[in-house]
Image (cartoon, rainbow, N blue to C red; front, side, top):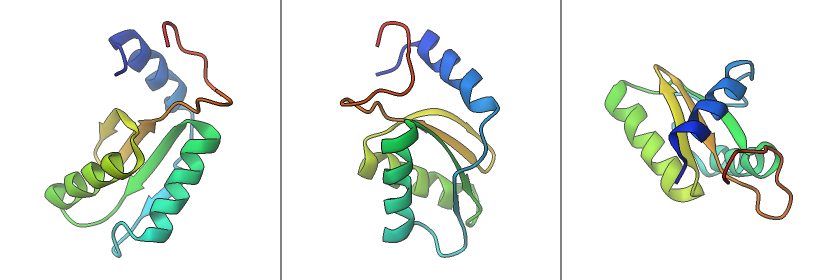
Length: 98
């Protein structure tokens, strides 16, 4: 579980990053989930754009991504979701107290 200071640091890092994965009208497919897994393994901090349905649909997609990837939510604003998952073998991002 990320601390408040860690989330704050990750939000600052995510601010300048671009959306890596976009989810459209087809929703969360196996291919998209594979792309998210690969992005998390490589970058640790990933910005995802969700352009599918209304808020309830986006929330369901977000919950499914978190459940299937084991990532933690850093921030969710509108159609954009920021996730973090530490790469245990080769960490990319240095966080205080992690």
